[in-house]
Structure formats: structure tokens, C-alpha cells
Image (cartoon, each protein chain N blue to C red):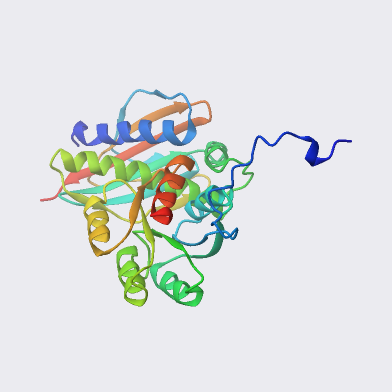
Length: 154
Length: 145
């Protein structure tokens, strides 16, 4: 996978998270996973389709999801209810939309699918025949991992 | 204990959501995201607007507009929604009421669709993430025109 695909996601995540959470962020070391890997517990997924195809995961623990949703709603969220899930989904949507805009400016044309959210313990994700790049983003509210797996369409 | 009248009136400004006749502007929110619906509701309520109703897809949005008409001042319309998208719903609402005031709510990256909506007759648009200032500014621009 080409690294240039991931930078717009990192940039978009920084912009959006700063804007909606008003918080400090630091970027962790980027790493590559080509086999199965565990996910943290609350994972929003958005599919990419067009010149490149693949998917983006926004992965976090339940505690982090609740902290982010609380900050975005301006009230304390204590469980993973519909509003919390809608909030995390919307965050994933905004970040992906901004990244796709940047990528289309770079000449890559593709669209995004409506987001879905998975919650549960002991989940793992396997990408067959496409490797994933992961960028951890550290915030006072917790860690968010952006996990991008795309390939060019043949 | 002091009564209200003892306080100097430093806050005499009418909330922006109130019309000259003293009644609130009535808004229909069409959006499939519960989060966005809540966000717009909170922002508009804080300025005295009344949320007449909400809808979760374009089809429901058109139906609710027809039910509320003529007692409705403004619609906020998401673009990407299940069943019927916001552009089609905009068209249907304008077919029914050519003076309808519809503001599109869009994620970044949908410029072509926003342009299409404006050409079709949407009065303005707001790009997410939403914030209080951005939403109130655009809403008032449309209502006060």
C-alpha cells in the first residue's frame, strides 16, 4: 500500500478532532499490519470505492468512545447507546469525507460508503490480500487508531 | 430577595430565533444522524427557534414538510440519507412549495452535490463539522433575506 494514501487521513483526523474536541493531539508511530490484528472494542468502518478500493477503520476502546462522544455532545455519556454510536459514526464520516476531498485533489477519485459501527470484546480484523497501515493518535481522552487498507483497482 | 426587575437589563436583545411578531421561527430538521439532529436542535433552541419536527430520511422529510406547511419557516437537509437523498427531497419540497427555504447540510467532499442543490433552489449550505456560529449565521442569512 502506498503511504501517500494515509497522509490525508491523518491530516483530516487532526483537523476534525481539533475542531470538534478542542484538544491536544500527538501522532504515534505509523505501523504496518498484513495479517489479523485485534481491534479495541468500538470500531467505525467506512468503505472506499472507485479508483482505489478498501476501507478505513476508526478504532478505540469503549472508554475512549464514551469520552469522545461526551465531549462532542457536551454532556456525560455513560453507555454505548444509539446517540454515542451516532456520534462516533459522524466523527468517522467527517474525517473520511475530508480525507477523500484531499485525495481527490491529488487525482484519486473515489466515493465512501455509509459508515457502520462494530462494538464488542475480543474482535479482530483480517484483511485478505491487502495490507493495512495504522496511525495511532494520542489524545487526553484516549487513543484513536486510524487503520487504512486500500489498493488500486486493477 | 431581589426580584427580576431590580437587575439592570443587560440582556435585552431578542433571541435570533424569534420573529418580529414574537413567535419563534419553525424549523424542520432532516438528517439520518441522531447526533447531527441533536446538535442542530440544541444550537437552534438556544436562540429561541422552535424545532417543528425532525425526519430521518428524505422521504419522511418531504412528508413532514407537507404536513407542517404553511406553518414552517425553514428546513435543514442532510445530503446523504437512506431511502431518499437530500437532493431529491429538496426537489420534491420545492415542487410542492416553490418558496421553501432549505439549507443543505453537507460533509466536505460533496461540492458537486452542494452546487447541484444550490442550482435547484436550496438557499444556502453548511459544511460539517457544525458549530453554533456557523449554523446561526447561515440560518439567519436565509431567514432575514
